Length: 582
Ligand code: DGT
Ligand code: CA
Ligand code: CA
Ligand code: ZN
Image (tube, rainbow, N blue to C red; front, side, top):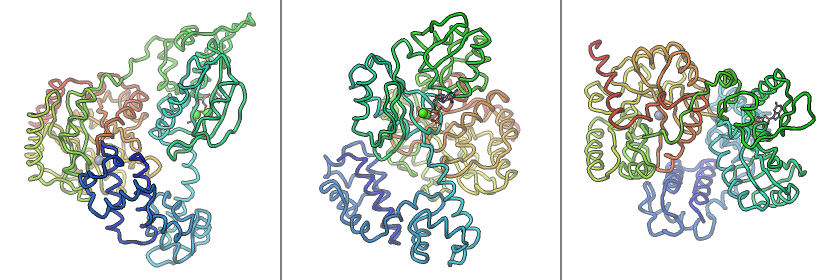
């Protein structure tokens, strides 16, 4: 049994206990244990003797984990599964509808499914319950309606996981000459409806036969000699997948066509037409000829249309055609340009690993530096640090810097911008930090002017380097704050404040479009950070990079491309420039 399977059962147990109205301390203990197992770097099943080393795991939870590993299930969970109505756990996936609400709705109105919930909300039966009301009823109604829409798309981080598993399996099949993922995943989009693969093969039927037999294929939607469509289930994530089977000659054109976007493809076809050509899925025809021209690589396809190569992330008809015509496609930011991560949490606040563990993992990734940016005192739900605790942390940072060679740990904070606009630490404390991120974590429903002013005032502080996850959006959960972006971008420019592209797969904040706007219209500079709460989270930098690429960012646009000395000089500049104004 691997760690992920253990985590899934622990989380399920916590969910079911919540639904049964159990003591919330007990429930949060299981959730905490789940996070610790997830973040653990050893295989739990092989090291049951080390369970108590995991943060937040005590004797009771250790016993439950042992049972899960030994029997593959939890007797407590099985008991709850029999006692609770079947549809109840599904309701947990509705945004803003918590387990206690679900418990009440079940007890009072007997609701056990989304359909029943929708009906009850539409009939106005929920508002009368104690502690509910018309406003809450409306919120529940919207949550059910939203669910129907959002369930069509999958987060990029999950789609990548499925795609990697499929790729791993495709490499074991016979007769495949070349293959690539295409579609919105290849373009780096933050959510994906279905996966698309393009495969070059000499034996399409045989490849199709092998694909439908892969272990994760749950349903065969269509099986032909040019296209196979299936539904897969990889570690509980279900997705539709299209496989296009083509010859090696057709491959480059097909890869371009099925990468899209549809809007980009329309522009390509228009250009071809102007040149007297016609583009098909498999190649290009000249007007005067029946013969199809094919290409070895995608770049040859673009070259035939007298266009520079356009990276997939730019293929959205957002100016890439004009750039390609003028040979002005930018060299986008890439993984190798990334020198260090400036936003992460440790055991001091709500992270799962020590400063030393984060530093060693970052070193292994080849970074020159990291900043430890734990939460500040007011964010009590995330165990924010007081000034005294912050100073203790500096001692530990100094010690890690002495003991771990080849990487530098910077002193940082992710400081709350309080609801009234004040900052959570005084300037004297901020002055002693290398990296100051200011973020909003409360008062998120304030009006546009108030929220904009909070961010603007934070940026006007000479000690604030970075605004963390500027819009606060969480994909499938909440939209970003209502903000005056022009005012914010102008202030960032005037004050020299850096805006973050947060690489958490649910945030990706700023998103691609806002990054592009801020760069094109205001010439801003950015930082890509993972906001890691554990060692494995460091790898999600790839999500931030694909978002930055979709925002047309290049190496000089991103401060994480700087070496340590250059970065530290840069971070001091804002203070120097603005100090006389205070
Ligand atoms: P999504 O919705 O996340 O799956 O987005 P895509 O872009 O992966 O869309 P999908 O899977 O429907 O199609 C993959 C690509 O195939 C698409 O980006 C462009 C190409 N394609 C598919 N259908 C059409 C079409 O009707 N017209 C054009 N021009 N291109 C298409
Ligand atoms: Ca797709
Ligand atoms: Ca598709
Ligand atoms: Zn934050």
